[in-house]
Amino acid sequence: NSPNNSSSADSIASLAAEITEACETWGCFQVINHGVPVEQSRAIESAARQFFDQPKDEKKKVWRYERNPLGYHDSEITMNVRDWKEVFDFTVQNPTLFPASPDPHDLELRELVNQWPQFPPQFREVCEEYAKEIEKLGYQLLELLSLSLGLPRQRLNHFFKDQTSIVRFNHYPPCPNHPGQVLGVGQHTDSGALSILAQDDVGGLQVKRKWDGEWAPVKPNPHAYLVIICDIFQVWSNDKYESVVHRAMVNSEKERISIVFFFYPAHYTMVEPLEELINDRNPPKYRP
Ligand code: AKG
Image 1 (spheres, protein in one colour):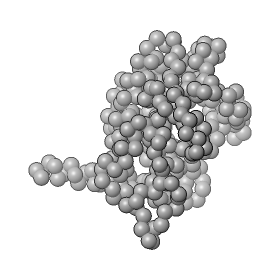
Image 2 (cartoon, rainbow, N blue to C red; image 1 turned 180 degrees about the horizontal axis):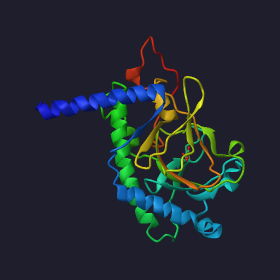
Image 3 (cartoon, rainbow, N blue to C red; image 1 turned 45 degrees about the vertical axis):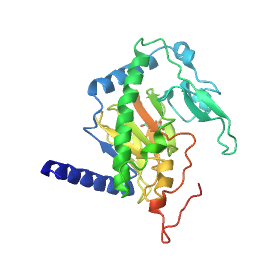
Image 4 (tube, rainbow, N blue to C red; image 1 turned 30 degrees about the vertical axis):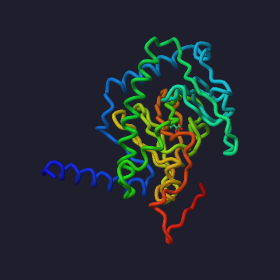
């Protein structure tokens, strides 16, 4: 109750109000002064560049496979000939338990284990350190998002005790083809709760505006993260916040890197609209 406490409570409340507005209008927002140390952001970007700079045969040593889809892949494996990118994925809780199939009645679980490349030598350490920092930011954002929905600050945290989150490096090589005909990644929404995206200064990410369906470029700011509302959050909020449709354009001259933290709850989480947000006038729009 000291003056300092009340001014910090006021600034959290006003931050939560700004987040409400951004999520309702855009489904995403940028954060600066986020607390992830700049050395760690630089180290992970440099590790990603060094990894992707290797010949394909080297990268293929950590090629992902069907039962453990972590590691390196490109559109050869996704069969999506329109995606002009290559990817490296690792899980934040290693190993992570994951449903073997999308069928909710199939209870078989798989253990997903990270595949670490030999080069660059500090790759694993840099990734693990970064994961700790981005996870901290994820929890802070969850708290602010809870407040922004008028819920207790810690309301969502327990869903993430055994999180199945993934960090993805996206590398988009320069693409000589006509940019209008090729997409780095086609339009989609993310299936998790939140995505926290870092990008270099090249640009290419676009989000679909909710009010007129037009594509809006996200101005790249290498010191900021873009926080994206994803499908699970849309269900929790019973459509108050909608998952944002986004895509990445290619660049004909420059390569581009983005690093995404896909914040997923535990595999056993039953996703349904939060009961505090439901009433007779706002019945649940989703079944569990
Ligand atoms: C994804 O990895 O799902 C993305 O949407 C990446 C977008 C980007 O690279 O900016």
